[in-house]
Length: 262
Image (cartoon, rainbow, N blue to C red; front, side, top):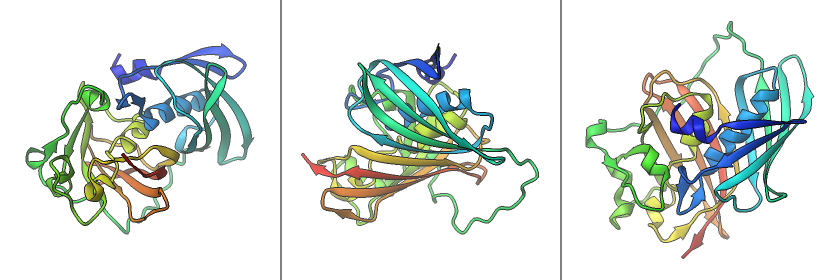
């Protein structure tokens, strides 16, 4: 079993309750990655759902989650022929830490409608990109390989740009293929886009994250981008995209986060 699969494993406790162990293998400065936690919530919802296709999840991060035991509680909100909807909460020590809403669609193998008015991020060859270093408290990048476009990687050496965007290639270091649940991790794993213009002097904790899965990727390495356009009154938005190397859009996201200068 790959590390990610082991770290999102759930135990059925009965009554739509699931036991989980939040590990420190996907952390940023000691804080478990929000996409990793969302993957757990999505997995719990999938256990309950009669529909499995193109899920959309929105999570509100109510307070800090720490590595250790957790419980996920799932409730069905409603269903129709095409969609089934759930709410789920992640609890630690009896306190709700994350509240999520999820919508799962009925698969439609006959659907051929597709129109892209934008394409994958333009990136140089992987060999020309800048590897994200493995830092002691940033275990996320011990287990994910990120190759950043040199155009936006200057924030690591104090060379800032005029555009708040990070983009590059992501893959699992242990060779695990990308799939539906891992897309929640990948789309939230890019360093904050604001660092490209503001440097490493800011703390950007997530308030709310919405992720929509569009297609399952067919390549193990993915092209990802994260873009921020507005920082106002201590808040910012970040729009994420994940594409596979065949040009298929895998997922999109919108994140609202705080912006705090150290």
